[in-house]
Image (cartoon, rainbow, N blue to C red; front, side, top):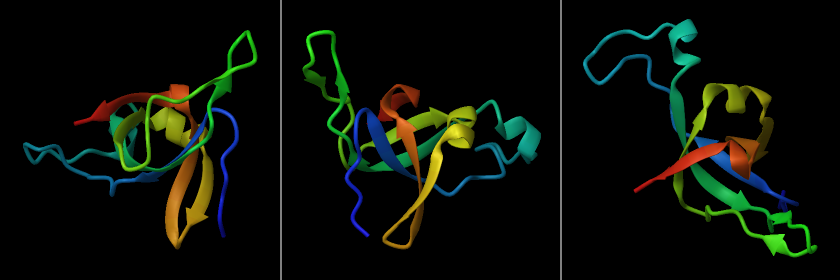
Length: 99
């Protein structure tokens, strides 16, 4: 199925969640709620309309590795794209791009 996102939406494929810190400490689910999650942008909508009715494109693009909060992932819309579990987020829910 081909999905064309509308508005300020971004389709993100989450990276596999880790259950340990880089130092080897186990993270229970309750502790992971406050951490940033990482994923890869699969698709991007045209953007949001500004006051003059022009589209302002999201600052992310397909292939970007992005960070978002666990709470954003909880309210995101689950979607399967090419057999991969993804989530649809608003662009403003993305905290940053990993270089």
